[in-house]
Length: 108
Length: 112
Image 1 (cartoon, each protein chain N blue to C red):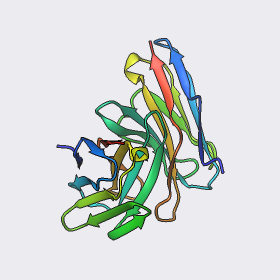
Image 2 (cartoon, rainbow over the protein chains, first blue to last red):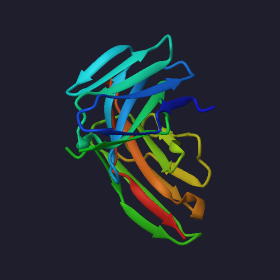
Image 3 (cartoon, each protein chain N blue to C red):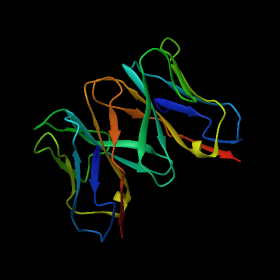
Image 4 (tube, one colour):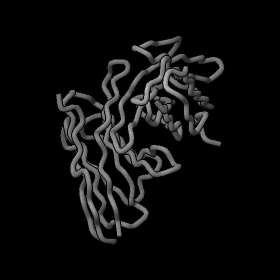
């Protein structure tokens, strides 16, 4: 079993829909990152969380440390949000353990 | 702001050839990383460096060597390339401030 599991693996939605991507992990962590990767592109860090909730524009990330679970929400989704979203956890100070990613497609 | 710069972006090698991927960051970060990304496997850590002059193995270090000659630069060397090393390679750096994590644009390597 992977230490970091994301669901769903693939998600297709219509423009304007509310999107939720989930991340569950099995190890103790100091922080969790949500990353975005556009097709053929580089990787951008969207959020780093160690507790609670963060919001940036239409993106909201939450984490429940006790339940070892985090969610990434996108409100009013847009085709430009189409990308792979990756959850990564920090079990220690240096290393990151990555989920396999969720491929999101938003249709106009 | 350049952030993290990787070169080359694309490379085709024949089995047995050697090459070095270069990575440089201009953010004064202590930690630097090399990952490979393969379909269905996610990102896997090859090597990392917590500070200048130190390096440590990650999950998949076999067939690779690294050098952290100064704070800015962290290179990844393939001494004798194998087809199994066909992948997209990402360099990353992180700082001490919360949330600082930056990736390069990736280097696509094909070994024939």
